[in-house]
Amino acid sequence: MADHIVRAIIREVKPLVTSDPVGYAARRVIQSGLPALPVVDEDGSYAGLFGEREFMTAVFPGYVGTLMSARMIPRSIDETIERRIDSQEEPVGGYLTTDPVLVEDDYADTLLAETFLHHRVMVVPIATEGRVHAVVTRSEFFHALYERIADIAEDFGD
Image 1 (cartoon, helix red, strand yellow):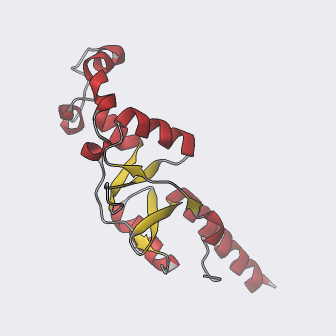
Image 2: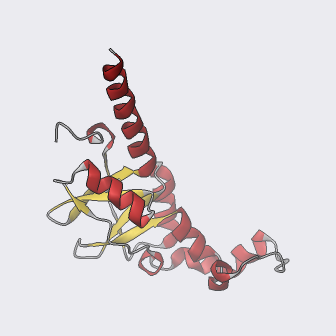
Image 3: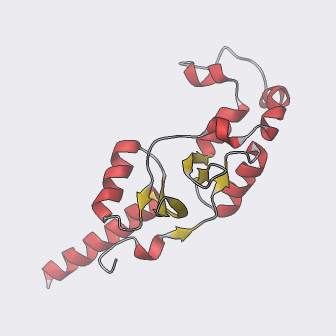
């Protein structure tokens, strides 16, 4: 892995579990400082991602995501929250992004780039034999990629 540009930015994480309540999962995402965390089934197999977008999906009624505009809904955010407060106790497994974005430890940087480009996720989980243990964020990958390009450009200038 010596040539990986992301080696220094991989973050070890404890995945969420599909049975974790939405409110607990949202707190874990916030505490992690990441835009999303991987989620596993009870048997430890990868189930998907839960983060900012998935939390909003849990809080707002399903039709909000299909509207072209929500201007005609005069309700305050507090009314919406009060109507959907029970969503905080629902299992997080019902609100996952389930794109198959898991990569194994032997990944190549190009595989991570392809995953970020094609799946439009903000986090890619890293696994050992299918068991998630870390993530790489798109933002940190962008920074590491830029730094590598800047270093190589500087070498060409010498």
